[in-house]
Image 1: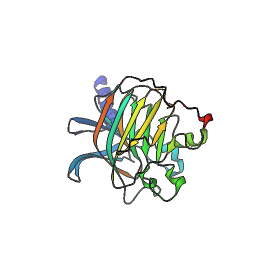
Image 2: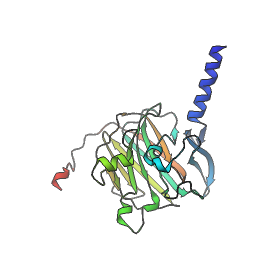
Image 3: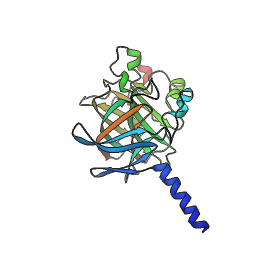
Image 4: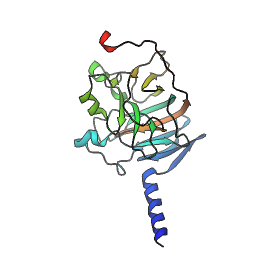
Length: 248
């Protein structure tokens, strides 16, 4: 009887932690602290997700502590991504009404996610400011962070401005193709059909080097995703363009 009770409690914990699984074509996504569905959007089937504020509450007075957390859709059956390419088409809308008026349409990718969600890397966008008529705001369009120790405010406080943020010509309410090339400690992000990258992470900060891939949204955002492609590759040593910052 005791074992049955423990199994029942474990089953409840599993459901609450990981939620439902949705299938889009030949890919399955496990929902972690997001609500989601497969819908027809602009004539195509897509994955739609929104952060579940009941499962994982948000507090505007504790901003860094309650954003960039474990709210995402995990790609099932790929638990060993280390180096390679992640490409996805995504579309960001602001919820109406928004639970957080400054919401910027936070949307992007998690990768090297540890099985228990205790660590991962991320690159995401704030499309609301991507084409705004203010260069300072544009410079915060792209964000890298490493969970759990290096979220956005910690990175702003502890590193020179622009080290882990950048600009990209994106906006709300239109499809954005994001491609991330991961190689060792570096990650490079390409937007749409641009030949050259918009953003480079010269040194990622996470200790977990291999894991799952996931699709991310944060507070106030409705995210639509399609055409996720993940290609694994071996680490490639590249000495090209090895310029020290001090030389610039």
